[in-house]
Length: 297
Image 1: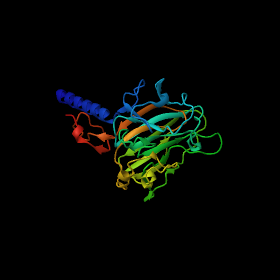
Image 2: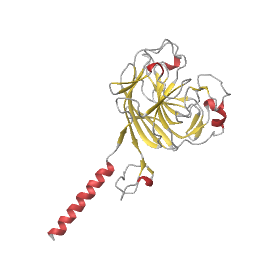
Image 3: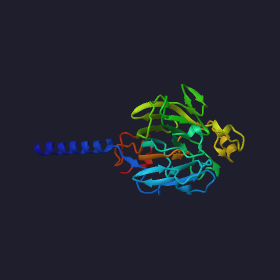
Image 4: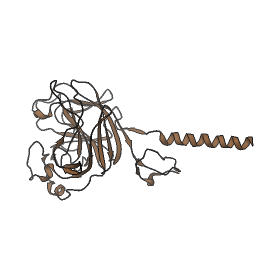
């Protein structure tokens, strides 16, 4: 009897241990704190991995976007892409704007940056392309007067659904507070494939939308048309236009550089796609999308 009870206790302890392991979130640090070996840089009108004028810098465990070596911005729009595409995930990061905007930057780019979600790859950008086809969580800093929300959404070459209707507005404001000065701000996005995306600022949900898709923006412009919602000289406009309405279910994550200095730190991702078989060693209870090909037994 005592032996059976002992075996029962061992079983309970083993089950509890497995449950704790399954519930424990496994966040991935996207930045190694020292270099950009996991990232690809693409500037408009530059080849891949040309870090033009030392704009992207690895410093003090931060990714810094700076313009110390510039005389003028000269449309040097750039993005730095993480090596792996994702579909269902949470992304958390801290950001802060610093200093003054470089000469030659557009007025609307003062204390303006962002992170691109479901983005095309760095390699697939056209040579003169300003922004990748993607969904952007737009980050804005206060201008020391009035309100200016952050955690907005912008849609270069894309569109989304709000209140049951496709919305082609290039940028849609969130309901966040305004953050003045150079303080750090915590942001998060919850991306559920092609179903929905939510933006959080300082743990408050400030914006939700559904069905991110190709369409709108420069995909409806003529070749080479150049205005503030276009993306420079995009040679593949016809290719993107032919895909209008296609739901974006996965893509790359990229950091934006568009003329105002900004720092990023604590960039971490929780993958919500993986093995959903409770019998597997790598089962996680918080996975929302099944990929049982990854199960380990």
